[in-house]
Length: 104
Image (tube, rainbow, N blue to C red; front, side, top):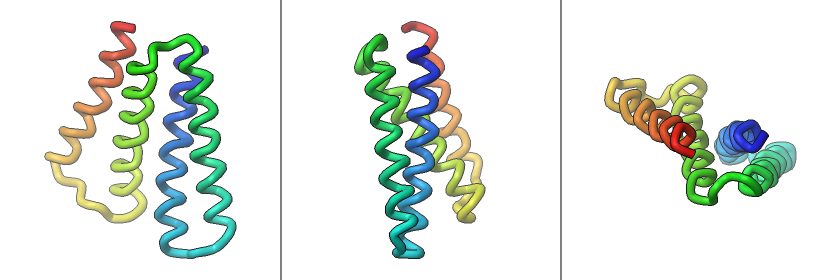
């Protein structure tokens, strides 16, 4: 169950990052509330995952999901560059997260 909590935390982290961009563009209270809900939920699920997962592993996987997911969302939603170098490094981040899961 801890790994499911960790994946949910990572997805909420991605949502929070997307809401930062929305808040920068729109400057309205709805975007601010969604940002706070996204990051708040992310921290709650991260804390739940850390009840049974090692802190270093949980934090690294959570950060990896958030960082790679944010980069992917930037490419898909905001026209950020999609060059092969970015994709290689995103794959490396995700590979490291999978590797941590494999040894935990």
